[in-house]
Each structure stands twice: as structure tokens, then as C-alpha cells.
Amino acid sequence: MNAPISERYSRQTLFYGLGKTGQARLADSHVALFGCGALGAMHAEMLARAGVGRIRLIDRDFIEASNLHRQIMYDESDVASRLPKAVAAAERIARINSEVKAEPIVKDINYANVEELIRDADVVLDGADNFEVRYLLNDAAVKLGKPWVYGAAVSAHGLQMTIRPGVTPCLRCVFPDPPPPGTSPTCDTSGVILPIIAAISAYQVTETLKLLTGQEDKLHGALLQFDVWQNSFTRLKLRERTPDCPACQQGKFEFLTGHTVIFRDILTIVQHIRQASGSGTLQLPNNFDAWAGENIRFVWRIR
Ligand SMILES: [Zn+2]
Image 1: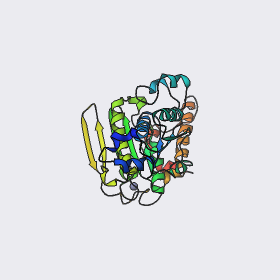
Image 2: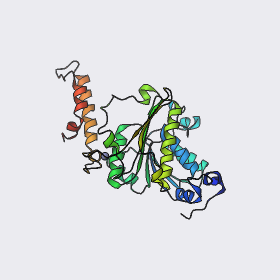
Image 3: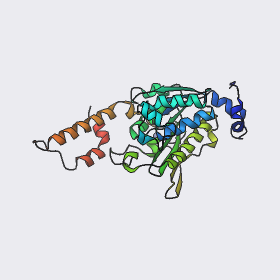
Image 4: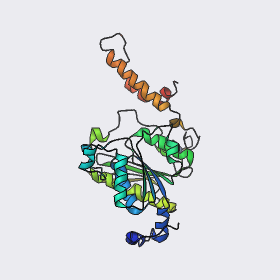
């Protein structure tokens, strides 16, 4: 709370929602950011300019040319250098705002490390591009009582909600299970445009600033959905937590058990067997994919 307020924030501290007190709280804050791709890079840029004191940047990927149209922290020199996104993002943050401590972590996020990655953070911010990470984040954040800010975007469509464990519905209250693999559009299958990234990130970062400055009463309290191409916007008010939610009501953190990894491995093995069985004797049911999709929980529990 006693961090110096530099001239660089003069227009931000004039904003009624922050002031010098809010600015000082941002300087003392720590955000764990998962993913440094399109959403994550936009979040990181805004958090650094806003003066959030410490940003942990977690991403395992390297920068590619196909990232540049939407991942605003990176440029052609980063592609040529083949830098990890987390490292390149940290270097850019150092150039934007030397008062911010950026901590790059080039690592695969999994059930064994996710809790350690968020334990000392004030807010967990989602910049991931897959369901596996988001369900890990939900379990870990609910278990440790950390607020987390969900956001997703593909094509021109996006979703955003903010989760406060024990107060608001969690991700599993709203979406009890992840969709079966391969059934949801991704940026690799449907593409994406930068404006929807900017729109979703704007909501996520604003919600994060409210949380970091203790203004929970200003959170929007809804599942926001919008499409910047189709001109649609819906605001689904979130009310009660789901009474039988395994995560926030029953304290069963199924995604922290490692069984999701078993599930993924089983599917991989089955796919190999299926490919090999073209000339062999093994036959799988024709409807195996549908069956697997309906029985995800069962498959998790095989071990
Ligand atoms: Zn829940």
C-alpha cells in the first residue's frame, strides 16, 4: 500500500475507480496469468501498463508466425529468435514498465503443479486456449480460495465470467464437464480475429483490476457472451451455486487427481490401435467416439 505513485500513472489515478489508493494496491498485487497467447498477451500488456506489481507468466509454447495477427506482445524478431512466449512477454514487460516484476515460467500446466503456481497469487487470470487448463484452474482456485477470471474467444465469439470461490458459481456450476475432445471449435479449426480477443481481454482485465483493489461490488456477476461479427451480446446473470457441484459444493477436485491425463492417454492409445487395426483383427465399436464422449467420467475412474 506504500508503493510510490509515479508520474506515469497520473491519468490512471485521476480515474474515479482507482485513485492513488487503488494504484498503490495494484503495485502491491500479484497476478498468476495462465497462457501467453492471444488473450494472455493482451492481458499481460494491459496489466503491465496499469502497474500491477508482479505478473507470473505461465506458457509452454514458442512464438510462430501464425500468432502475430492476434498476439500483440510479439513481433517478427521473436519468431526469428524462436523464443518461448513467456520469456518474450517478460522481456516486453520490462521495456513497457520497469516497475513491474515479470516472472516467466515455461512449463506445461498440470494437476501436479497448478496449485503451486497460484498459491501466492492474489488473482488467477485465464489466458489459456484449452478446456483442460481451465478445469484444472477451477479446481485449484476453488480449493485454495483464489478468485479467478475466466475468458475464452474463438472466431468472433467470446465468453467471460468471474469466479469467487464460495461466493459465486464456479466454472463447474455453469459447465459441469468439459466437452468431449474435438467437439468444440478452436482457433486452429475456426480461426479468430483480434477484435474479439481485445473485447474479452478488456472485460477480464477490468474484472481483475476490481478484484485487486477490493471492489468486488463492481464485478458484473454474469456470464457474458458476445459476437463482434454477428453483433450479439447476452448477459446471463449468475445467481446460486449448483447444489451438487463437485468442486465448490462437495470439495471433490477431480481434475487435480491426474485422472484426466489417464483419460487422454487412453484415447491416444485407442487411436493408435484403431489406426493399426485397419489391416489387423481388432475392431472397435463404430460409435466409439460418441461413447467416449458420454463416458468421460467413467474413463477417468478406470484406474
Ligand atoms: Zn461450483
